[in-house]
Image 1: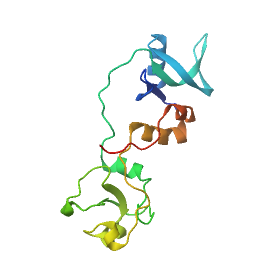
Image 2 (image 1 turned 135 degrees about the horizontal axis):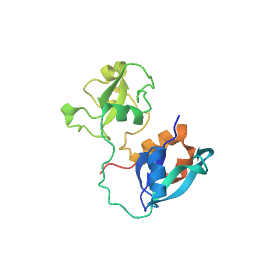
Image 3 (image 1 turned 180 degrees about the vertical axis):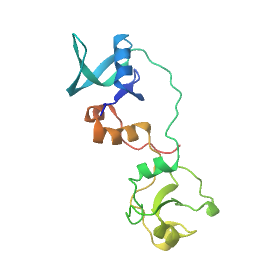
Length: 171
């Protein structure tokens, strides 16, 4: 499996994840500095051997418009670890509004959670506290770094020192 390469802006904010070919081109053109590499991997050519980059930092600051993490079903389930936020079940997952839409609850990161079908039906059109249900954790708006840290824990531990993993608060 080919390892991915994290690209940071000059201020160390993550802006992209690229393949090793793109990383090597950026390095060759001297547009980036290598901050970390994969110790057990290397890239070989006919006459040279290069370290396999893991984290790159741009040498010039690039203004990148803030895109944030898109609010969709997949990202919501990823944020909640694919389990019901009431009972912990990983089966028959749905999306639940903590404050129901009928009571003015918005469709935002801080009001949506993953819930199993049984808990969602039990809660119905009420707030969790009205039916004696407790959330396992408060819903939050994840940052790009949050999802990159999740990937890094499984595939690229070299990235972890460069990622901010605290959830950001809703504005």
